[in-house]
Amino acid sequence: MRFNRNILTNDRKKLQLIIVIMFIIFIVIPVGILIIKKITTQPEKIINKIIIIDNKNDYSSSIDPAVFTNISISAYTATSFNIKDPVDNYHGIIRSGSFNNKQNKSVTFILDIPSIKMSWYVGQPLNNTGKPILDTAVDCVTQDQAIYPLLNSCIDQSSGNLTSKKIYLLRIAKILPLSGLAYKVTFADSSDFSTYVLIIEYFSLAGKQDALNDISSSGFNPNDYQIQYIDSTQE
Image (cartoon, rainbow, N blue to C red):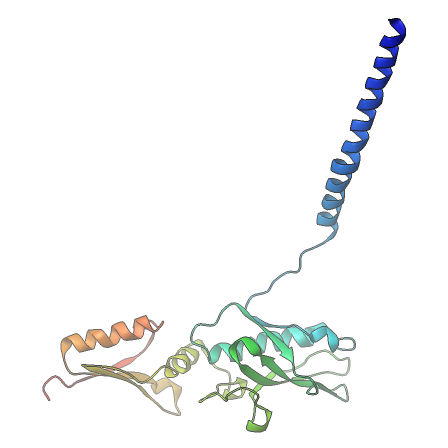
């Protein structure tokens, strides 16, 4: 009986050892690997309000990373001028055959944004060390460069240093005129941004309020704009 008991004890110890080994192999080691990966692998930081250039690595071997950062930010700014409700970022691609590093003095290419069918001709001047200098140029593409329908009224960086007020005005201009049974909303165009106003002509008091509601439902706050009212209720 003593011999049998020793055999059972030894078998039990072997079984316990096997269990421990299996636990280490299938639980401890995989968990440890995951922890190490989490510690050593930093997630890519997502920056909002940029155009993410998906294929920039195909062109970046000799280009300072700051060049693409500047272009990504400036291209997003120009894009936001032309979209009513821009999202935090878009994905773009450098059009094949358009990339040009002109004697290491500037980088130019056409940036296509397929999700919103929009393209920009972008350019970044460089200093003698290849770092970006001056402002990034973001221009509307020409007819022969276009692969998407051209914007009716393209607003690009060449429009000048646009203030927030100007951006508001240029964005709402895209949806005008608005009209209903008893109102009409138009944009008083002018070369002087300081005189830009919305014009609401209303044919009843209810129409006046309907016009304001229509502006709001289109994604704009009427309080952000100087409004000229034309009372046509007596006509």
